[in-house]
Length: 251
Length: 210
Image (cartoon, rainbow over all chains, first blue to last red):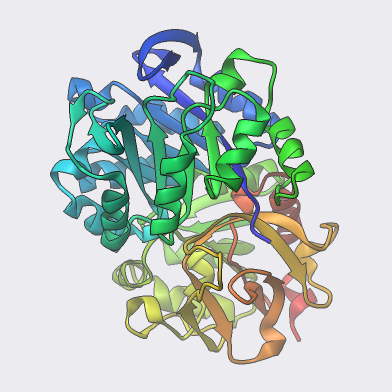
């Protein structure tokens, strides 16, 4: 049986890792290389690394940095932040990313998804969708939450899948860093609307939140940063909790 | 120390495979020179990407005949993920395009059952069919890391060495003598993946000549 994946997220800004609340007020939390070495030892399922200010600053991915990190990373690695062209996708895969996350760029140029999927296969193309509640519904935001796109997340997720995204990371801006739980409602709606795996992200504060992202939210995987960065809680214990709830995990 | 040629057809990063091979006690050389394939003890055909683009590159680099020649001479060859699929005769991912044809069979898309998602992405069980040397010392049903939408269906059921319970059960390891392939990524599968690579490093050409 396919296991639920528990994915620590590493957020990179300038020279190190950070973690904020609702995409703002970042705190410095150490270096990515150190974090990767720790997660290697713990046999983590998968890692996600995002350079969160690259798109805002108009920067390209830092290939030298990713190369160094990927060389140390003996687990699957998704890399995002500042990916604007097919050349960027190719360069990231070239230095060792297993999957490339696309976010702001595909809002403006959705053919980047299909071009990347045709050249490198759908399995390495991940669409990241940042969502915020607005009135009765949700809307998609880009550029680290700074730009409203007007897109409906469910429709946008379906569009991304149709174009060739092999996976979707759904991040709730409202819940990010609050440790109050995932936005289960939008997670479930997106999961039910697409047939590719969906990774829930944003809001995990305890193991039960993680379990609910997979049970109520129907996510294939749960990503989180604060819980693994600021508390004693670990991905392994999260999986033990999931197992107790009857969910399939790798321990 | 075994010398492992990791075949570089310029579509994906080979550093993690090379580092994993070295961590398991092998000497790795990333190469697209046919002469290197000849001098190596073992060959790894890695692969991430699209079947058509990958075969284009293998052909453009003049590697198709070189790989076939070595495999037919009995040198152990392991395909990984797309590299395993390229051992087949043809793939539905590229309109039935020809592969290396080293193991008879074809590559088809995974057909999801209720509640399953494609791509098949993440950790899943690998169940051996009979004695599989690559899985020596690995517990039956151990989880390996997969990321793929297509799978290899050999014509001859005897070439199926392990299966995985997803999409009705697909083939996780195929083998015909010294030509073998894993649909999962041993280099990303941590402890069990490294155990499999050590088993591969220990394979002698003669031991498998049927």
